[in-house]
Image (cartoon, rainbow, N blue to C red; front, side):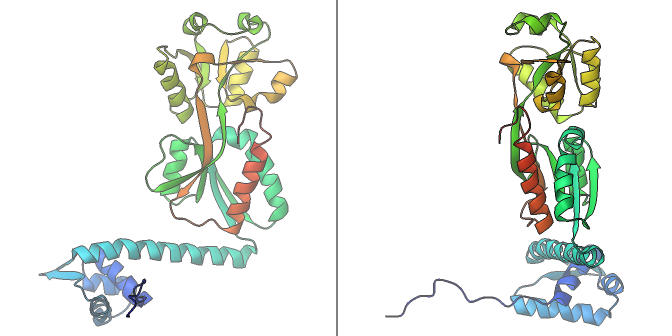
Length: 314
């Protein structure tokens, strides 16, 4: 009995000239401008497109006077081809860096807080593994880092999960919950737990209002029927700590940013209680992007370092 094939025969892939030709024609909407862009003759571009159409048995380009437009098949193929060329360009850049530096490169973005309290420990370990790696670090809020990621300024971003775009992948590293901090002589410092009434009467020192942290915190207060009233909004966790120490009020920070201050008796920590909100921290990159060896080790070291952060759960 004849057995049906479970897999279709492998289709021979188009060559790179055909890929470049279709992308150039799609972007310029002209065979003439496409040939100028590729620095080949117009007939060479036309031949590549015809050969590709023959190879795939479908029409990819339609001519309307001097204007050139893609068919539906052409649009689908263009998107794929554009992505392929982008990856090839990045591969070429990576090889160039590897030839110059010997151990690749790392282009990463991280929130200001991670840059201060976590990233230095990570980079120290990474330097031991890759002493000649080219490192580029961008600092910013999670939303800024996502923009840098989309603009190819960075390849990886360390931030808070919450508004991850559809084109990105999020890999969790750790979770935490914000806490109240206060000076040892603050009235709350002697309380076993902070009542809802006390929380509703207080105004707080909080992280920047444009940040993902502030958005999550505000959302958490509202879900519990309370209102977050900031008396001071600062873009630096260290600044919030110092303001609290001099008696400016109660701050709301990540627990792992005050470990030494609590140990030294400079600050007292209390849980947020009914307005607590769990945050998920992790690595963001383009969906489908395969991490390089340097990036894999970077992620591994991040997870290792974060296991030692007070109040962080892996």
